[in-house]
Amino acid sequence: MASNKYNTRNPAVKRILQEMKELQREPSSDYMAAAIEDNIFEWHFAVRGPQDTEFQGGIYHGRILLPPEYPFKPPSFLMLTPNGRFETSAKICLSISSHHPEHWQPSWSVRTALTALIAFFPTPGNGAIGSLDFTKDERAVLAGKARVQAPVFGSPERQAVTDEVHAEMLKREAQGGSPDEAQEVAQLASQPSKQSSEDNVRKTPADRDVLQGLKQNFPGQSGLPALDAQSASAQQPAAMAGRGDPEQHAQQPAVQMAQAPEGAPQAVPAAMHAQHASRVQQQQAQTLLGEVDNAVDAIAAPAQGFHSWEDTGLTMLAGVLVMLIAAILFRRILIISGVDVTSLI
Image 1 (tube, rainbow, N blue to C red):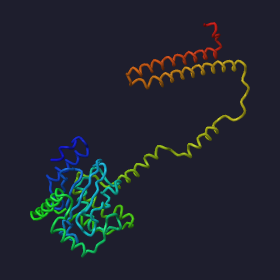
Image 2 (cartoon, rainbow, N blue to C red):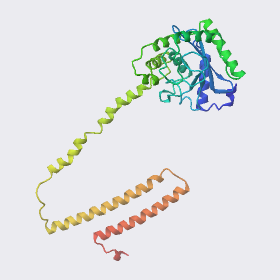
Image 3 (cartoon, rainbow, N blue to C red):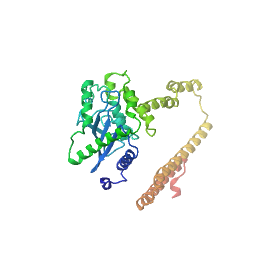
Image 4 (cartoon, helix red, strand yellow):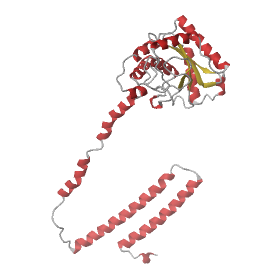
């Protein structure tokens, strides 16, 4: 198998190989997908038209292009079978496709995307990129043609994969296959839209219903992206609670000024003035010593987690600088205290 040439430690390759095994282990009669032998980032798929719609009975083929950043970025979808809803050989615009990466969630898979794609068939295009608005009769005629044979596509190798997938879809239908998930999501998609046309293009009500249905059909998948906005809005009051009232903070200085003693300051006796000057000198000395301690902590702290000889040299140099600063500050303290520095030399 060509997947042997890929690095299985790569997150994208690992995820793609895992999804390939899951699709083989749990087949569905409503969709099928297989990677091209020489490129696991390109898949060929086929989906069955949803029942009770003009697409019923049709088998629609297409391509899935997975980005190297998959599953953190969404895939691209191109239809190969004429269907009257999506253009062929053009990337279609869906909220699960590369046109809207903001809606994609890494927990979604190719299986999730195919189930959603089936649900989008009976929904109106509303002018979205790659959408068509054929009549129901025209779509029904195309559905009959789509069932007869697979579309002609690409090289003989690609055509072989297309024919194999088409035959397997007919075989699964004859055998009954798994429960018809496409019918369920089609019923969800048929609900009327209440949003504006611009919002429908980006995210229709059918899209939201489909994603809710996907969450029920596939418990491993996460919820709607819109739920993130709700959780963020719920957290906003809690964040605002700790900020306090700005008007209250603005009034605090006025309150403090009101509590201060009124009147002009009285004259200070000479003895009290001398004591006050002594206390000021002591406070200045303590402040300078505190600055020395802070400088030592600030310089020594970054060097605690390193053990290279460059960092050791820088630490020694910092120590010398700290000692020089301490000596200068100590000399200044002595001068402030009135000690004759020259007598100490």
